[in-house]
Image 1 (cartoon, protein in one colour):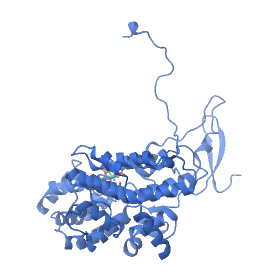
Image 2 (cartoon, helix red, strand yellow):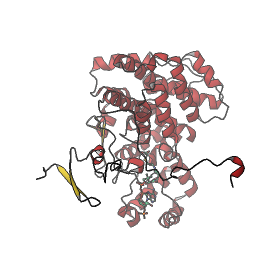
Image 3 (cartoon, rainbow, N blue to C red):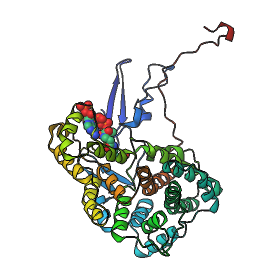
Image 4 (cartoon, helix red, strand yellow):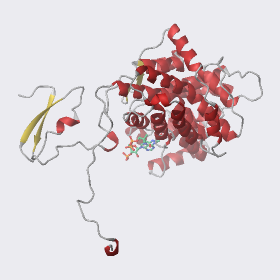
Length: 430
Ligand code: CMC
């Protein structure tokens, strides 16, 4: 008799029955391989384009319950982390598994702060980009170029060496992002200021001009810090999967992280907040919202910043950002789009079309308006996402490197091309 924690599969092609163990609510795809029609048969494969129902790893980093609208990093609810911690505490938590003690935080902060500088040749490398180069393209290429500055990163089986690269990456991505921003403005780069916080220093490198000492506005510094916390990790999304897949070849983490950032660059992933801004601008006024909603329901438009593959409830990150928007707009010019966004959300949340499809605001609905109010052009939005997500990518990479079940990522395919055929000489090809 079959055990309770198993699945009995009957292959109707052969009439044979198989018992496959179930553990953690899953079966192992490799257990299907034994199901064959005969000795020539390779064995049964599972087919899952886009991995919509395939767990590719065990992970202890981030948990999402999409139905309940829950997001935890290492077990801590995102709401508590956003209220009670700083980004560097969260980065430590995500990478090390526990929140730091004061002593550990001081040491971590000192280490990160003292790795923020980049080699002068990195700066020269960035100078080579065209004046209107996209900052995300610069970010991706420069992170990849870091691998040439740290050839020791090639050997990453050793945890000590890995930790050093992690530190370098967490510390240097704000510098690279800020240099990319200054490059498109045609302004001289501002060097890191080690007296400032992680985010305070980033703001300094972005916005410092002639003042001797840049002083970040505390409300803005805190708002950006919270946005960094909210974007630090999101389990096995497209870019985390890219980080793991590339890293599984044992390449250095700079090259793998450049690949992850490239995955983030796409409009279906890190680019939606820009689309929200464009949508709100095109709606233009509250009076035009009903007409826009009609278009969405008619399939002529999409309500950008709404809906999520995993969340079928209010994205917990969106709730926090919505609340924070007022605090930011109190010290910046309020976004002219916020009134339209709030009214649009109100109408959508009461409308049967959105309610029945469980479409709620996601993280991108309000974040773009805050970035805009902070003075960022839309091209910088994915870069602002990539800075905190670097921590998540590195935690996923580190977990993958330590996991004895992981190997080089190598999916199977269902071949649909020709069977063998012979090459026809050039003169006889039709
Ligand atoms: N506006 C209008 N209708 C929508 C929307 C939307 N934003 N999202 C989904 N739907 C409809 C969709 O047309 C479908 O309707 P029907 O059943 O009648 O065909 C139904 O809802 C289910 O949608 P789906 O396309 O099967 O859902 P999905 O899980 O494949 O897509 C999504 C998720 C995020 C790609 C999608 O909701 C979307 O395109 N949203 C707008 C873009 C956006 O805000 N993206 C940011 C995601 S959060 C950032 C991140 O994690 O990267």
